[in-house]
Length: 112
Length: 114
Image (tube, rainbow over all chains, first blue to last red; front, side):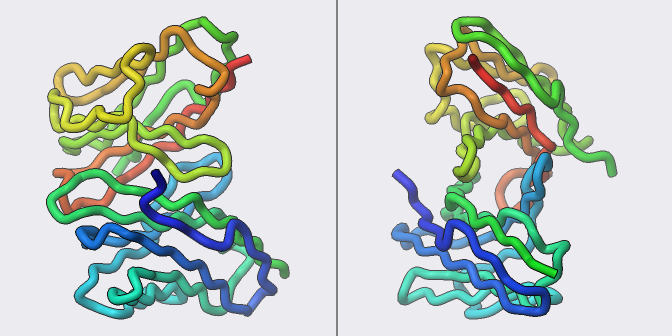
């Protein structure tokens, strides 16, 4: 079963706009939540990650918001650029476990 | 540092044939993973190695898939015989120690089974 549910499946945003991708999970034992960025023909690359002891983490134009009570977390891409066009995956992992459970992915297209 | 190397980049085979993929992880990375990524889905872990040993192969279809990591470095993933539903990108990833270490993915091998 899919342990991390991701939405939307795809989105289109204008250059300079904000892209928002949402993920939800059920397993309260998850304690590490990374986001991966994947360009066509490439493997996923770690973008940013958060642990549940903080509600927000920002790195440049990328921000993760985390809502522990709702078991949801989201990625915000501010001032979206055409170079941000890629597929984004959220993931989650339990404390002490190696295995990452990935969401289904969101394809982001930034129009110039 | 050099990234995770995978070969071949593409492979087309007919069903019931066999195929093998090769992975060379980042130097010094003890943990190696094979993921299967079906079009439109997130990667799914097939098998995880810590040095030479298998840590998790619970999602590996063992009747047709096998993997080995000799000498704790390179790894090969084999499918025999292949089925149509095995068409996917096979991603190899490595990490320094596993827990709390980020995964570094290779660019994958795209397998098409006809």
